[in-house]
Length: 143
Image (cartoon, rainbow, N blue to C red; front, side, top):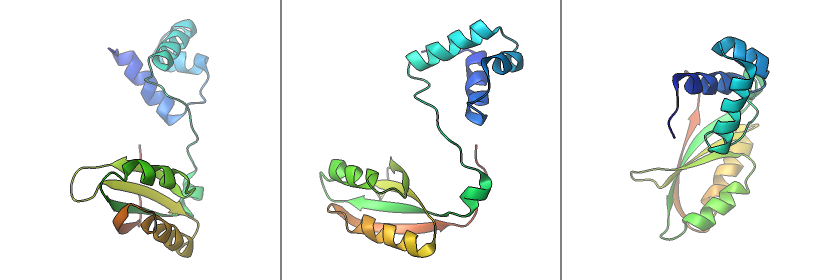
């Protein structure tokens, strides 16, 4: 799909605040409301916009203990491990990666002890051979 500069600007604005009204989006883009609505519908239909979510406040996020958990898998364990990771509420996202590890899980818990239990739970999943965790101390850039 080809995207215009206005499409990219629209996506950028929506990524900052997806709750802006169509009228406000139109004003910021210098377009009519019907044009903006048509662009949003096309981006949704074409799968560029897959959904809308919640961005948590900095105050709430600062109360969470976050970590990157690097995971090495046994052969043919990807599907099973992915399903089990999805069932763990504190696992925010999981990425397949190249290199010496197979996956990276981003985990957020309310306390160090809860984070420790989640990391142990990940390590106990059948098919997980090894984990390496790094606690996130601060966020320097978040877009």
